[in-house]
Length: 486
Image 1 (spheres, rainbow, N blue to C red):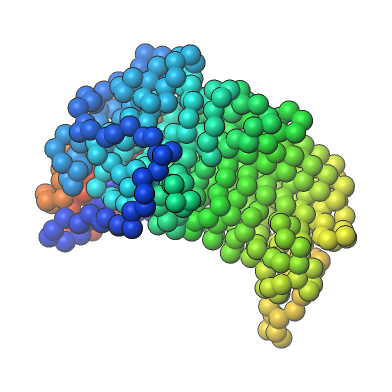
Image 2 (image 1 turned 60 degrees about the horizontal axis):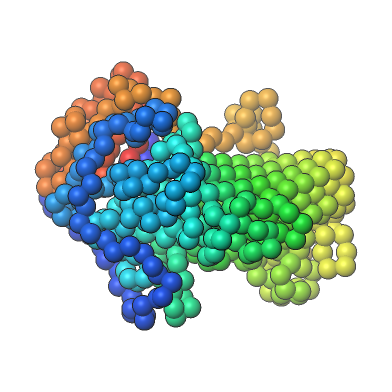
């Protein structure tokens, strides 16, 4: 059992004292005129035990949330329902300020503060509905923006919307820099939301999500709808820097670019881009892996040809993917003499092409013809073998795929989305706090946690750890079949 299931919103601490909070401070630039975020005030919003009547049942919204953020002060609210802050979700009312208030409430640190802290986490919940957005929603550190997986909320931009992202994960400040160093932005998540930019004219540059983040961050079960008119300037997801992350179960429809992305290292699973001019623009990376990528009806599938003869992309791996009705699958500036020699690496393995005339194109040439076929293996770039480095451009001997590693009836590796247990009801969920754990950073919660895990595994129940600092003095045992969510 992976500890990350708990650590996403709870801390288990070994030893006699609570885990101290960490605050990182950078030099503070001049205040940004664009940082018009509502001023945070101490939380006075009551915790709701049930979601709105129009919101389909979802245990995370329906369960009673029990306050305990030991380092945030008395009364701090971790779980926030945007409707408790005045959001209407009726498709008419401008909900921008209400949503921003739900994010910022409780003295939390905005990107304009140039500080990060783990003292004040937040889960910001969006019940089903359509929320009208007129300016960027500024995301904060250690924040999860969560919709209902049984009926994802729609965040719909107004026609006059301007800004770098409908959700801005690291707002640029007046000094031209991001509020946080992107390689220090951790503990973020967006899931179960629809980002709708279709009201914005296609001639206006617009981005759905600005997401320069790093470890312990993810986008999951997100749809971004863009203007698909001729000449559109829309982008679904923009990542210009950062250090690692995960994106899975994401669909982008329309736009000039489905994704415009660069990061040190990243993994994407089950990402789909439909009807974009360019499915993915790969700005730069050290290493990037796509598994289960689907590109439909694009002029170019993936482009990493931003600079002729200069490679900003270290390497891209595309595995078990499907490309349909795309003129050129991969467009690269790589050549055997491109600089640096170790960059521009491309690995394709088990990629199905359907009506794709060109598989891999380079400067003035076609490296690999397309068609309607399956690319069992293809590589280009720098190859290292026992006899030394050499240039690779062509097929290679792909590793064997044992049957036990494959999805049933396919040649694809078995993969699975992170479960959300959306069909569970509250009587199938055990709150670790109700089971006796304090999560206050002082009480020894070992016995309470082990007891709850044992009984829940026996009954097939889900164990939910409300945010807290859970002090443990002995081994925590997860029985086979345990289901644990933080």
